[in-house]
Amino acid sequence: MAVPQKFKKLCTFYKYYSGEKTAPVLTIFIGGNHEASNYLQELPYGGWVAPNIYYLGYSGIINIAGIRIGGLSGIFKDRDYNRGRYEKLPYNNETKRTVYHVRSLDIFRLKQVKSPIDIFLSHDWPRGIQNYGNTKQLLKIKPYFSEDIADNKLGSPVSEELLNLLKPNYWFSAHLHCKFVGIVPHKEENKVTKFLALDKCLPRRKFLQVLNVDHDPELPIEIKYDLEWLCILHYTNHLISVDNSTVYLPGPGCDERWIFTPTKEEQQFIFEKMSGNLKVPLNFVQTAPVEDEVLGTPKNERMLGEPVLNPQTIEFCEKLGIDDPMALLLEKNDNSGSSQSNNWVTGQDTSENSISVSYIESEVSGSDDLDASPSVGDSDKEVTLSSPVPKNRSTLTLPPPKFSPSSKDNSLDLSNSDQLSGEDSPLFIIDEGPKRSVSIESGQEDPVKRETPVVQGIKKFKRRNELIYNRIDDD
Image (cartoon, rainbow, N blue to C red; front, side):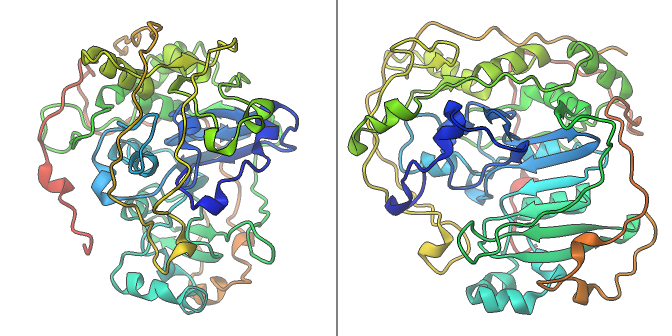
């Protein structure tokens, strides 16, 4: 974990992981910048990290009782945005930070979503969100935000793009360690996004708020895959990169498909591929040491497993016909001809020796913690350390993806938004009129005529639309 030494404590999550405790309510979360990223890397498309606790993956959308929830994990760093996901255990002092940086493919996929979203989660604040709340009050709490606000650098530019494109009813964030609320109007659709960020989970800090969101009472409180999102994952699978180099995604003017909002035919194809069942299976599997093994190890010899292919991800990828980025990365290393590749295991093997043991560094240099210094962004340090000598990996491999070609509000008065955006505002009890019903088994026909997608097993990247990625932060 990229945290100061004083925060390197086991705490209590292992009790939920081991089964000693169970979360009392269904819990959905995204990753931030102080995570055990090696565990979250096992679930790039989301999955259970413990019974009743569900991770949304690098980016993802799910459905719960008619409520559509989307999310984006990690934080934005421009220098890593257009790279592939190349990091794997054992991390060095650089990769244990870059591993949680948002990648362009995650944003590209979310930009394909057209059906309305009820709730969206991000760790970063969307850039410019302070303009829609009580900025003066924010600066009283965090006065050193003023420079970044003046330079329009407070928050993530890609989250700002998603906010303006997706226009969810609610947007929840964290990261900047203070409570902040705001209302973002979307005049063209006569609706608003209600933004809420909360503080650290510490005594006398505003870290918790309970909201009531209308749902379909006839549906069970259980997680279902989102059909539109499954289609987007399937038809953009060929864009996955595990290279530590710049990756350019397709866009206007290129000679291949660049709009992946699914057609009705594509949705029907994926629905049949999932056997008509979109319920997320309760298939949590332990893939890491639990309490007795960890607590019985000296602090300077704490156990760190080698890269793992999680059975949940294996099952999901096989059913949907997509690749696990970790499997691609391990396969790439194996095919490189090196005689020294990292071991990897699947979580299905719980016998002895199923998890290799490595030593982890006892000291941490650099931190992403905002309280460590008066700056808004994390303090990622460009440091590269030599990795321990890896071990030969096993011959166990995933089957190749089974690709198949597809077959054919009431008006809102925002005049008093300044009063509504204060610390104790009634922001989250605004009446938005009758509840919208969502059907995840239907899609709208995209007006753009598309060619039949051709799915190939070989990934092909072109240096196209390069100017799009030469971002100027002040724009």
